[in-house]
Length: 251
Ligand code: ADE
Image (cartoon, rainbow, N blue to C red):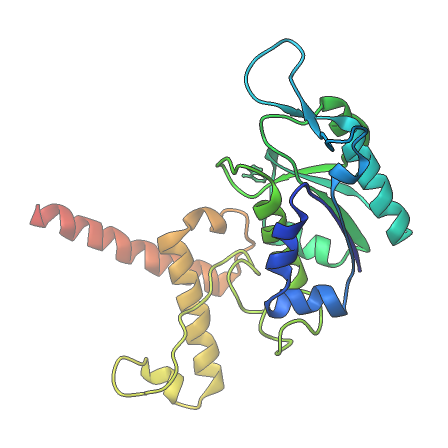
């Protein structure tokens, strides 16, 4: 996989990628190129932003240094990769998108400051705008690292156990089931200690659905439900209606 990253704070990206499984993935499994637009500034002070036409607060990132940096990354990676801009205006980044990106040939992440990037750069050079949530960060670097982490941990060989991304939250439009480890004294659901794998699977399936129903019912809206799930959800729904009713009576 080939990944490019364009940032005026390359040290921030490098520092975060120095550690952990994702750092190792970048060093060992990915062809990674990190370039600062400052290298493509036309003046001695390496200016990358300027005042906005029409006035107003804040500075706007100039198109040329950004274009220079994207071209440089493209040249070094020898591939025409989609350019992804991190911005709160973008489409919401989620697990589905992470999976698609993990299966792609690669991409170039471009980070900037939110107040402004010259719109002509976005119109001419950006293929996808992605947001990591409805809040505004001071720059796209942390958002780019979030995307990198979510994508790279899905690559085969990055996590120790190939199965460990299979069952977890959001992989199937639902949250993960609860986990327990030693000591086994009290509080561990007996099914998990039973050694009966069919019962354990059924228990986990039910708990995952229950957690999703209680914490993130919105996730169930775009999920295909089979007969068992529908039955479980029906039970959960009745249970929660009963609880609400009891709460009302208590006052
Ligand atoms: N840059 C600033 N805020 C952002 C956000 N929420 N998502 C992605 N990029 C950003």
